[in-house]
Image (tube, rainbow, N blue to C red; front, side):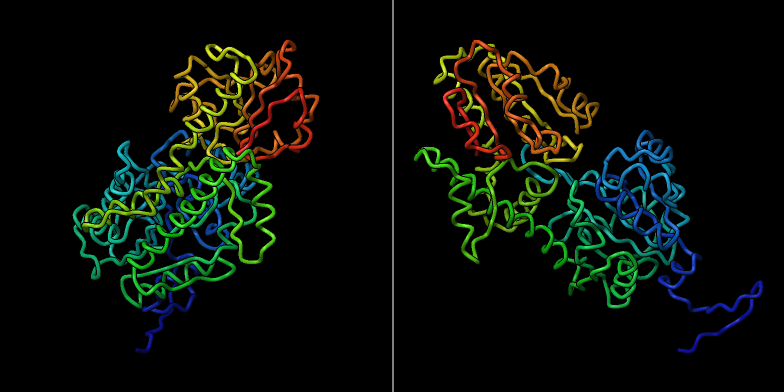
Length: 454
């Protein structure tokens, strides 16, 4: 089909110019719904190429972005100050965009069933402001079928528009790793999918604007949804295996990290490490897959077994600490214990779904109220979610035991002298738990320490 060309204000334009071309030319805008650890970096990346409306319901967060502050630490304050993203908490501004990316969290309920309320709420808001000719791409991790069976009906109901006629949809699972400065949006192959070939082509071209290593075109939306949910399920299972090995090797009085370093010399050995599995992906996504499997009459064996092991690791760490206190002749009840690090992973301020809280709560069952220090964490968030007030490193003194729970950069440089200063001088043995193995083990395998790591 030939394009009809005409002149307007001195410019030659194509009447049938596609959405991608209009985005690149600045005639249309892209919107990002949800500006958290995933959505905000995506918005910033696209704003270097095209016009972007960044929307989030959290007015306080929007205020920080507008003032050049990055509460996530994902891109930094300087980048936020200089970005061209048009940050807003006004949902009506979504009407200005024709290409929409939804990047809201998909957590689980207390019973481990999917909590789809964030993505449903985002679909309602977007639907109320959706215009004809739009393309909507969901990035939130879900089980296969959610985009088409749950999100589309909401979009249609709220907008009065018909999917496939008035607007198109796609799915492109997020792969951003919070706190990771190497594996970023630009350097990770992006899976894209669309409801038809035309939509897939538009979505692929748009993402190729910012993803330097290119995109992978999945054959359907359900395939893309499934690919995302199994990525983290596979990782969860592998870490569960490492955690189980750690439990076994501790009973054998063998250092797990030393075993894994030796085994890792084989070319095809998968180098996973034991640890606390929290956050919004690895500890959550497997439950989305097993939930859908249960609906279809299949009860997961391997996936749920791995989840049980990983969910119990906080309790295991706390019990191990109590045993070490007893072995060191230190009274357990009201013991002074410091936990260094509270976020779900290192060098990231996010405390949501952290498994360090499991250690904290389990120690409480033994009459211990730990002192918590985390210079990298969002203190207000931790107070709101867990009722915990963080202390400073200066408060870590006269301790009976210390747990280094998270491998923050601030803890990597701790010297033997500094750690010595954390303890009460009366202790002949200092109980030290180094969960991630960031310290030199041989330095602490002395008469003065009872050192433990996963």
